[in-house]
Image 1 (cartoon, rainbow, N blue to C red):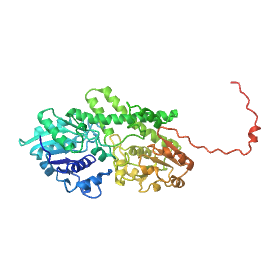
Image 2: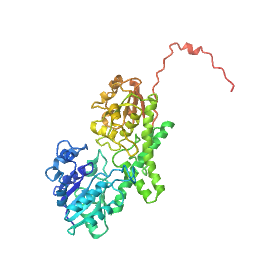
Image 3: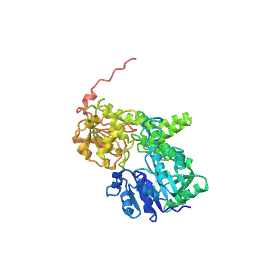
Image 4: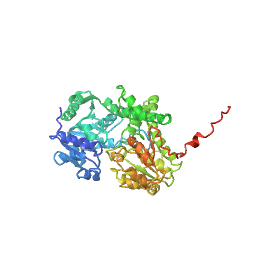
Length: 495
């Protein structure tokens, strides 16, 4: 078995950075070098202001950076010296060409494979850490076989990540499972054991699952598809609740107590976001289409369509409540990250809701405690496979603020898109006084449920996901009860 003493990770993003920081902390005898072509990102990893926000990450990095954890732009040197190389680069959805809008773009994976083949000598274990379509490892192998020197021996493994942003460090230190896929040859099994030995420093053997490469790759796509499916399922029920008078939170609790179903991922909201769910489901759809499984493809496509429907439905509700027009109306949008405790905005529902409102001419004042203004403007002006967004219009209609109270000042409505805890602790009486009347709150994350009575007492019109909020209507009392008593009884009318 190859003894792993030096690890190189290509890609210093949301996966590579935290994963290798924890490996370095848990394996002090192993030297871990994280490399990236982005000099600004590497400079940030070497500073006190890390390029990503993740609870607990700063402490992990501080404990081993400069000791056995290093961040560098010298990619070739790190690859040469490593026993094991993680490929942890972005695999975005293609925006043009065959498979546009669904298939994964593997150009960065291919570039990594070619660079590893070009500079490597000796024995290397190359590990897919990025989310990739099934049989991507085979593509890496073909590149190695076609370009390698006689002095280079390699094994390709699949080791997908199952991290949830906001709890990534906890997930890494106490994972539900670690999945390693490799060849069923003796050499492949030796490589699996080498990677397993790294994780066994802190992960119980019973939680380390080994499979063949293809099962490992498909398991990652399937896991994310199942989680996204649960969110779309409960969001579809939320639409039904709003027209029947049921409360989706009560329904979710009732069905979640069934042990066969469980309560996880049954939280209705404005839709799922993040770097993985939509991308992986679309990847699965494309894979099924290519393999001539149209019925399976249509099934998983519906998960995406429900997610899109939920976002549009919520946006339409905002417009409808604001008297069917939001043109030139100030709307405070609280939260831009796709979930709390992260600064990641990839596929955030906030982006889609903002775009729908901007198309109607709304003036958005956006606040998020962790997302930078440049990132918000980039996301709102970034072209999509189906449309382009005019930067001049976005710049005119969007204002980024650093104070939630400033965002709400003179606004017609507040739209909560991210479940940051701080949004439950705001002084809503102060906010109400500074808003135009009637003042609306649209709770897209169901974080204000316990405050509904208080908010209505203040004067807010409250709208939320998956529930009809009975608005308080103030009637003028009749002082003289005798006036009622003296009224003549209604005459019966024949129909």
